[in-house]
Length: 193
Image (cartoon, rainbow, N blue to C red):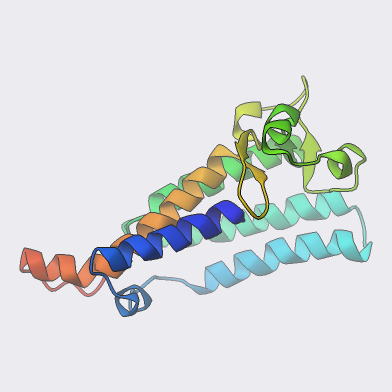
């Protein structure tokens, strides 16, 4: 989450520094936006099942994540020609694949140590969304293996998280600059797709 916030704040700053405008971004026409809402609801619902104590929380999380990933993938497929969306899609797919293969996001203890992030709750089995990566972990390099020491709250991220953050940043910057770029090219495209 911290990585995405840093990427978005940085992208907005770059967009403004290059003469972009927030109104250009908010005017970006994205298709099938309701799929994003459905993705958020599915993932939140899967997480809530665990918190509320209904059924198997790990299974609910994986099912919620799978449904969320399908909705997000469908949204991305409808918007693949929009700048940034291909990177977001690749990141989401990478995260979904590693979680589906393992039942939870594997976390590198070495990366957690470098980022000064405690993994005690994960090791104790109190976090249904994460597990400690070990010799039985499938697709380990796609897990949370990148330490990210942030000033307020350090975290460990996956390569998929990095791709999602990069895609969101590209979407924001290019969205903020889109009409200006079109005017410079002599075209008047109303949307990026």
